[in-house]
Structure formats: C-alpha cells, structure tokens
Image (cartoon, rainbow, N blue to C red; front, side):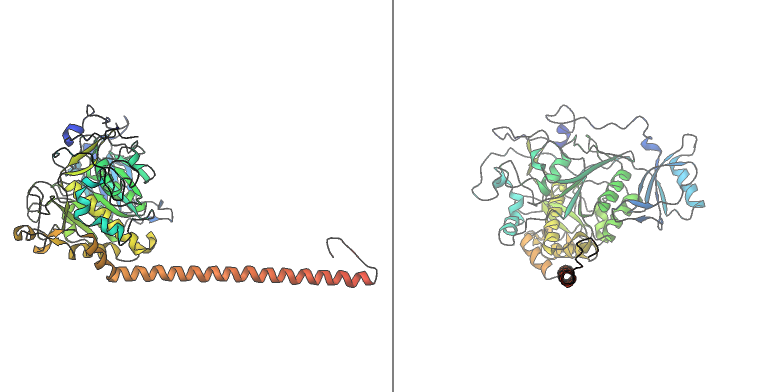
Length: 506
C-alpha cells in the first residue's frame, strides 16, 4: 500500500488504535463455532514425550495418548506440550482435573489450566514527528527521525561493518500479527500463522497495530523510499499472531507460537508481551528455544518496578536461560525510562523505547513508548550478529551462538551516565546496547570462532565434493572416449576383411 502523499504522522495510543473504529484497524479474527471455550483448555507438558521431528520440522512420532476426559486441540513437538480441551461430560474444574492427572499419570510433567491473557508491554504515544527527508542512505523519508537506530550505532554497523542481515536468518515476531497490506513488509515475510484458542489459523492479520510496529522495528523495508527502516535491511520475518485486537491472548497460544517458530528454524524470537502470571507452558516454550540456541528478546514491562521482586513473564526466564534477554527501555537522552521495569539480576540490557517512530495500520506512522519498542530492536541486532557469523541455520543451532550474542551485548553496553540507573540493570552495570561494540566482542568470542570454523569446514567439504564430482565426470568422459575409439578401431579391422556391420552390436 502506498503511503499518503504528505506522509501524515498520526500519533495514537494503543488503546485508541486497538478498536475497529481506528483508521486502518481490523476486527479481530473470530474462532470457529466449534472452538473449545478458553476456560476449559489445559496445557500438558511431557518431559520425555517420545516425539521425533523430521527434516521438514513436521511431527513424525506422536505424543503418548492423553488422559481420558481430554481432547487434543494442538500439539507442540518442539517444546513437549499438548493443549487439550476438557470433554463436555467432565464436571471437574480444570485445576482439579490437572491435580488428578498429575497423581495418576507420571509421564505428564505438568498440567495447568490455560491462562486467559498476556497483556502487551506498550504505553502511551508521544509527540508529533515531522517529515524530513534524510540526506544519507537509507533513503526512507523518516529515517532521520529514527533516533533509536543512531543511538545504538546501527548506521555504523551498516556502513563500516557492512551488516545488513541475511534472508537465511529468520526472526519470529510473536505478537498481534502484521498489516499484511503494508508495503513496508513486501517480500520480507517468510511465513506466518496464528494460534487462537489452541487452534492454528492462516490469518495473521494485525487488528491492533502493536505487532506491525514491533515487526517493523526489526525489518521494515529499507531503501524503498517509504517511511521508516528496520534494524535489519535484509530481513526474513516469521509472524505468529496469538493476541487479538485488544492486545490480549492465551499463554498457551504464546507457547504454541514458540513451538512453531522453533520448527520454522527461527534464529531469533521477539516477544513484546508479558504479565505477572507464571506459566509452566510458557516456561517450557522459552526453555526449548534456549536449548535449541534460539536468541529470545523479551520486553521487561512498563510498570516501573523491580522485576527481581515482582516477576514479569516471560522476561523473568532471561535471568537463568542462555540466549534469552530481558530488555528495558531508554529514552532519547540515553537514560533509563522511569516507567521501564528494571532488575539488577533479571534485566540485562536497555534499548531505545521512548517516542520511537514506527508503523501503524492502514499506512500511518506512529510514535510509541514502551519496552515493547525496545525488545524488537535488540532482536534485530541479534539477527545482524547471527548473519555476521556467516553460517547456515543448522550450523548456528549446533553452536552456542545465541548465548554468545547475549554475552557480547551485555558486556559492551554504553553505561548509563546516572549511577542510579546503571545500578538497576545487568548486575549493577546497566546501559544501552551498543551495536559496534557488540560486533567487536562477538567476533572475538568462542561462539563466533566455533561457528566460523564450522562454516569453513563445510565450505571445504563442499569444495572437495565438487572437485571429486568433477573428477568423476572427467573420468567417465575419458572412458566414453576410449570406448568410442576402440569401437572405431574394431570397425576398421572388420572392414578390411569385408565384415562391416553397422548394426547396434558393432
């Protein structure tokens, strides 16, 4: 869709744009009439589900049969999770049914009733921006107003380090979907899906604008003469919608999105949602991503509280899991945003998240504030570092690249000027992500060296395989030539004695 000629910037709040009356907003997708009630959904976890995933990342061997009284709604083989609905004749509450399951089914590692909502981490909008065409590349007209990209040093990564991303590095955005008609996503979406009430749908259209914004922070089209640019100029986006037009969704659906992202070979998962309710299903999902060496960027939350004390999920999992980061928000001055959650142990990094300019719905641009805006920027930076390693997704999965990226980003942040701010993040050394410094640290890391060696080895093997194939072809050609010469000589010999036979057996 082409932008309005004047590139009008509409400054809106999420609440204002989360309803159908907002320009460009769409009504939320409705569940089919046969969908089970969310209040009767359960999540079953299997520590050893006996599930095998084939080369195409499809389920090859099923889970054990679920307990009687349940009907399977969705299976998540990558994380060992099954979402079930209570059968209509079951009179026990979901919590009581789970307690019974755990008593008599030792193969089930956890059973929990589905959690109703996961609110998004985004706050009110900021002031109007003006349309000023930048004089430097990229040529997106509003690039000059994207202070967030300059604050973390992304233009330097693009120019000196030549880091633009790679279409083989998939970033999975777990959110409210995207505006599928927006030209800023043209050619950059590798795949998309949705999970609502445990059921998968092909409709990942955004009815809220939050997902479009966060996906745009990662990979809005660059150098296309339109609007803004994303952190990754060669993006490959995976979109998984689990939240509706109000910004709410089921945590089991979020877990199913994680499973889908992992099986789609995502290198990075971006999560701009959260709440204070702990979920074993969501924990299993984040643990599975970490175990698969997928980098996960999560928003810390916008309540201005210490997350070491008041846990926010899924960002709380970043405290112990490799390759998972909780991201706070900084402002245009590089200070910690007062409304951002923090935590010396639970929050590792900050990124610009105040008055960030990005994509809305229906061809508008908006400025929003929140840790929701900060987390996808870190996700995009992680994707650039993955691409810098120069290996295939499978090679990246075989090395601890995600945690190497986490450590590089943590160790090289631009420390907050105010010591009180610095004390609130990253073990007391809090600051804003610095892309140039993170690149240098990552390139000197063991993870980078390991994956580069793996990549070089694969290249050498492929080269030798090509040489060997060429030798085989050459030898076959020599054999054919020799046989042809021998045949010609036999014909000449027979011709001398008058026994010429030009038939097939000559």
